[in-house]
Length: 280
Image (tube, rainbow, N blue to C red; front, top):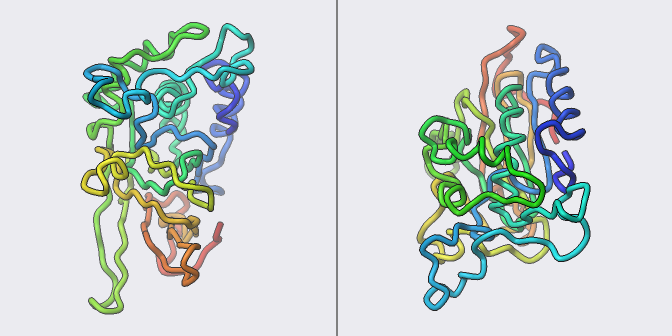
């Protein structure tokens, strides 16, 4: 999906996405993966709530609130009056209000994004999950008019742990010296969210992990890495999707993160999770 073009409910792109996802025959295409440049979920303080921010004490106070582009039409309304918030949190809130319900409705397995130059693996996230915090704000975000933005109350509820519908469990294959650690999302009830944006440009160091020098991470994050690399995705069979984040800077091709996503079989041909499958 083009995240730089209007994706709000009822827009041409939203309508196309709804129809495209709804037309997939899951007996022929059991795995459905979504991709867009801007993240619908990302650990970033760019566009955070301004509530409680003291400009005299917080050297990153300038990151709070909406960020309007000073050129063009915005991202991307049909008129100059519809210049919308281009911050990380602002775009993610709009995405969660308009697009994430389609991902949930159509059973999308994972959502991949970039933009921020970092590798992040999140929980299986559902912003509409009761008690998530942001759930009570989604309707108001959908109803925003041209040029209007999510308020500080919504920004303050962004990314709470209660939005995690499923979290992975850790397993280890092999002995302690030569074994491999894997994380398994076992039949998650929402799309697993990933940001894979560290292909080579300078890192975007605005995550909780970076700002606390590695002592903290965000509530929905499982892994945050400032490492250059790419994600290798392979369909083992209709019930197991295998993913590995491979480093590209040191040159040894080390796998820095490994995880599976599982789901119930839809054709009865579940195969062996160790079999090789199609790779992307």
